[in-house]
Image (cartoon, rainbow, N blue to C red; front, side, top):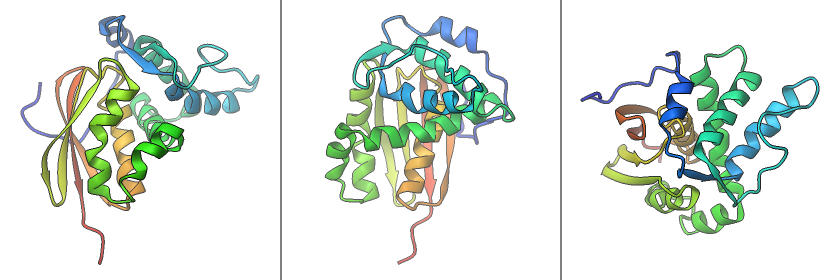
Length: 199
């Protein structure tokens, strides 16, 4: 556990087996978050194969254990030249787009009307939808920063979910960075810091 927010070390080793063993069997995630990673892995594989099952249904539930395993396998295939955490971070950026492009995401975020503060306020609602144990609370909102407190988020919050919020910052034209404070593997705070866009 760290007392301070720090830049995530995306070059650090990741003990996947240890993490997967700690994930509760009842932790579930929607199938849509397998899809982009699998499409990319299949495109990279010479035989056109991909890890996991032949098909994942977008709004059907699957275990987070399976999700983490498939993400790791896909990251190794799609980004073989990068450290594992960096590949997972990039897959997280893709996950943001997958949700935003889904019918549910379009409906949910249409009310934000391209306002970053409004979109950020919808984070808690989005996390309740995508996983049965996961929650996200927005804390300490400032003009150029906010903290997203992820709880019950076992699928790589310190790299995969960093990528999710990096893509969100980019999508709303906020130049910045994300700092991390890990309380437990499934309890991580992400501090989003950004510059105000030019008037």
